[in-house]
Length: 250
Length: 169
Image (cartoon, rainbow over all chains, first blue to last red; front, side):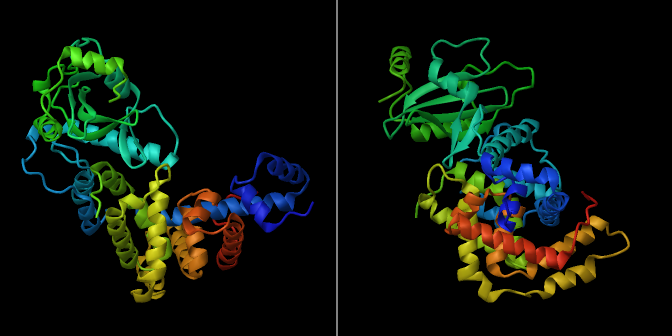
């Protein structure tokens, strides 16, 4: 079998299907020159990556981060419960050369969100992370999604890792709920069977604190977001139970 | 103009370092590369509705960058190939490591490739996209992508010679 340059390259890049790969592997066993070519291709690939990787560590110019900053909100966020704006965090990091100092929890929560955005996005793998990016939307997953789907705000669970405080119907006639963990609070609305997270904020809870069950403990920025979305008032216990039992479908 | 959701904006913001890196493979001057990123991000934000659900956000913006490069930015390329020579002259000092010297040589070699080859090198070898994903970004058949990449790698090998990373067989 005569190997083309392209087949060899595809082998070195891990792009061959299992049958072709086995064929090349069989040839490699007896052909040292072929092995050398494979190694050369792999080394070349590594050199290319290493030549451009330092760009990742450069500070991103302000003119680029500014493009992605959210439109200014009417009410400034509560200082202890700043809404995470990743572009802002990044810009700040670029200026200061480190994590922003404005809030320990803010920094950590930003890392969590950034991590899941990057992780699920770059690897393209489905993960069980609590928040993930899918089709351009931030979706609740894992424990947060389970809590949003099953827990009743009217029946708080003391030992839950995620608390749900409010359930309501929004102006688009869909179900929305607020949730919180020890680090984050958020507002998610049901869309095609998924909980789409529209807002995330940090919570000013110490590391050991249990999750907040009461809506009054939610960050003000989040309550403002609820105000903007809600049609009418929050659902009462029986309406909430009915909605849950019907799988949050309208 | 559709309002892009904060989640999409944040996701694009998180991609900025990679967009800049990809831009550096297309444009030969860092300022041109950042211009390209800026144009692409602006286009992405005003056309979020064109983003196809289930596809990769990075690939989508890479495609916008590639098109913007061919259509607009390439025409007014700043300092052309001279930058990599300047870079080599300015940045090599007594503290420069072998890896840095090699990186400059590699970037210079990439700068000497044609547009068609630079973009496949950028997508596959630098950004790590699978062949099919890269072919989709460029709207070309897989076979075309593969042969372009093979030619680009031959050219790079000719420009750079053999291994410098000590990974001998």
